[in-house]
Image (cartoon, rainbow, N blue to C red):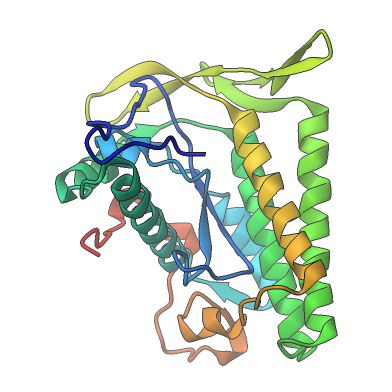
Length: 293
């Protein structure tokens, strides 16, 4: 919970650690909110880096693996548009929370510095890449089933498919946490590290150190992150969504939204002469983000 401040003494800035890698990935959510009207969810939703203009690491899934999977589903997926919407959501959320905490407006300069500095980070996080690839693959699989079986929104079958999607991810990430290990790279080689350590029947998340290249400065630094917190956030999201589905207390998203936005579609619906985004040619450094919202 965010600390409460009186109007006379809001914090001048949010605390941010220089050596914190602060990885963030993006996934489709199944419920729109007041903030995320287009529900592409940043995970985790941290605002310390955006508010201080410091870099965070964007977790990009295995796009070649996704591309092959999309062919089996007969789908096209515009990852660039998906990522842009996710980044916009992170910025909208950052502006709102920053205003609530500091009573100030988050500056365009801070957001621009954050985004440009983030583009300069280069490292490898094999397990997180694998896991965010899994997240997107399972959502795309669910989308294909609902489309192919012509399942209508608000039907019991529609809710059942969404619930099954939540169950799959809850099982996957519970097993990831219980397995207590992920892979990172160190000096070009794979290394297995623990998510947490147990002491006197209590669990303590591990802080992982990793080599990160700053492309602009042509320099490698040791940066740290806490992978357990990312997995815990993902698990919480799906457990919460599962509860909402069971209680039928909130309207789910109509998957037609992604077709209308050109983010996901059936290949046969796409005009063959129309140029489409290629996952294989994606380069994060070529991404142009309209930060002024």
